Length: 247
Image: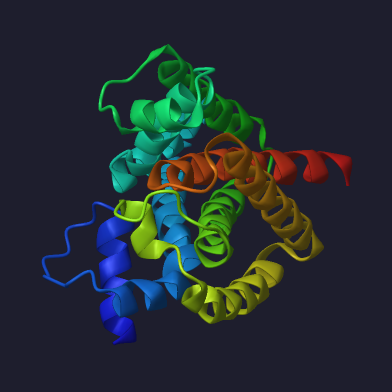
């Protein structure tokens, strides 16, 4: 059953060619929460490999390739949520209208700005890293998805029939804590105390995103999860960069 959950989450979070039909039932999805940060590490590893291969050209191309690799592997899944969330949250409308805007498939000006800002931020931050670039990319992708799995486990959903509602439930908490413990051990082995600082910042940032979403629309949606993932990736890379420069 756990293998089934892993494959399902890998199919959902990436565009890797895995030809296996698995039903998205509640139990399988709930257990899949365990694998979010590790699938993030897989995504980060692919991005890191692209960075390494292109680094023989120059750092600019390598950084751009690393960012593109994340978008390509995920199919832009989280960028779509980011654009919808930005269009809704910054529209200045009431709660119901914001939710309508977020469901609209058309992208608005705030959505475009958000996507450009996030992609450009990742490029600049990765380019600014002087060492351990691949490690930072891998851990940041894992931390971002650990953050949204925390939102699944402790948040409440706005729409009862939306995609986000399939993931949001308190039953996933034990799987979140298991993944937190295992991923933290792996992260500490890779980057030591620096990882723990990034972990703390990502968890706090996740809580801030959750509270802000509660304030604006009264809960969480699938789009907010996607936006959170993109924002957390930027925050984590930034934290790694700043702390490594400081120490």
